[in-house]
Image (cartoon, rainbow, N blue to C red; front, side, top):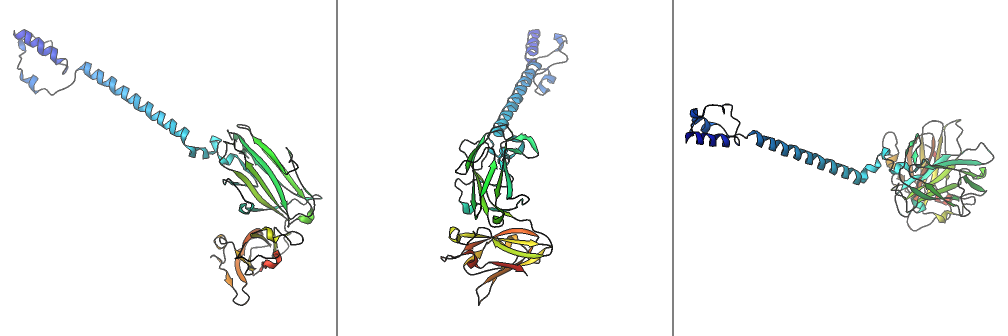
Amino acid sequence: MTEDKNKQFDNAEDLVCDQPDRTAAPEQASPVEPSRCKRPFCLGSKARKRLWVVAVLLCVVVMATGTYLTYTAFLGGDFLKSVVVSGTSQALFASDMLTGYTDESLNDEKIAVRSVIADTSGETCSFTFRIYNHLLGDKNKVNDKDVNATLSVRATGTTGTWSVNGTPALATDGTVNLSFPANKATMYTYTVRFAKTDLNTASFTVKAQVGPNSPGTNLKWLAAKIAPAERAEVTASGVSGEWVDKNADDSNVDNFDAYNYRVTVTGATTKVKLEWKDGVELDPFFPKNHKNDGGQPTASVDSVTHVSSVTYDASPGSEIITFYRKGASKPTSFEGIGVTCSAA
């Protein structure tokens, strides 16, 4: 009877713990052996193996789930498209002259003016702009999605003939469709030529409207108002100013609600005094973007003549300064607006 009880303890012990003395004689064992009652609970070898298998399977499931979620988030994150290497950023549809816009509709008044130095070496003046879908320094970094756009060029303030040369050529309506296939480095180069008599007075509105089937960019437009200017001969310090959009007979002022005035400084950095009459007001961001003796320039108004003025530090080169129509009155000419500049 004692031997049968000992065998029952041994069989149960396999589910509790491995015993180093299971080979002991049956008569030495006792069903109420104190060491068995005091031994702490532990799993047997078979149970431990089962737990190890379950733990390993759980780890595999957790790792697989985490990898899937990370991969899904990577594919679904639109913000990752701004990385140049991905090839799908708007930086891979760009121009060396034109600025990107995300507005569905773009009025000419919203287009920034860009002053460029014209090439005057030939019989005519010219400037060149490019539109592309790859990094200029590495054609291997190319947009991996399609972009389609319609290019248009319009001139303002020209008295002579002008033309746009490039491939494909612009149609008679001044537009042409451009295609930028996915994973193919593509660049379109166009040169605008115009008469030398129009230098410093003509401007050209260049717009590339992105088509509806263009997953390769978030932009809706590439555009700029390009104002070609003559390279200044640096002989001495000097300050001069002129209207960008004025035509030859100064009769087109009614076409604008804002007026672009070009200030050109030659020689060394100097102080410029800018004056304007009561019918217009200065660009409100002008003080933040300029300095006067280290601080922001402050405009003042003459109490008698009602002429406003501001003095600021100007570096050599040309700058476009914008004035906006004030109130309901309309100027009858650009000269009548009364903007002047001089060395302070």
